[in-house]
Length: 172
Image (cartoon, rainbow, N blue to C red; front, side, top):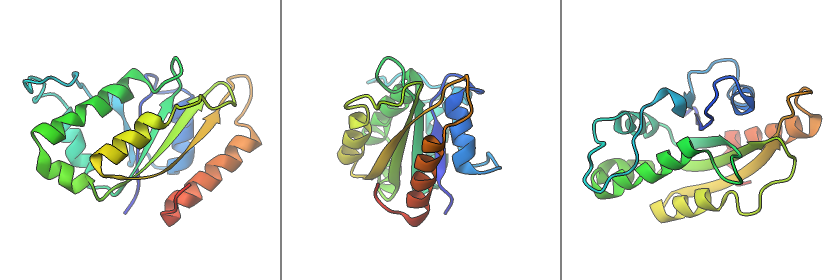
């Protein structure tokens, strides 16, 4: 099954989108941009049940490999990505059948920054969320993009290794 790329950037034409296009190949049919979905915050009374989260999660549940891509915003994942992760609580409280289905998936994560240094602890929320949800976390990679120059060779090399691990179902 084809992996699904979940882009948490708040820009359609930004660096994270460029990285998503490189990873996913020429077609964008397997790239989900969270910017295209209206998702409210998690609510204890399920008052956001009519927004786009449940249709999106049902679509994602059809894929067994999820790759989260997010820019580094203030040393953390984007707000859209955080809202998406918070909404996974909906599954635990009200949609246990979908939760059971996504337990079979494998998760990878990618951060995209303007600096080549990975933020310490950046991937912990991804790892711990997967662990809490009983989902296999396969690993992560940090890449960077400087608007003044094309994607650096070291980044391309990291992306190729990341893509190869995903295609083989290997842990990074």
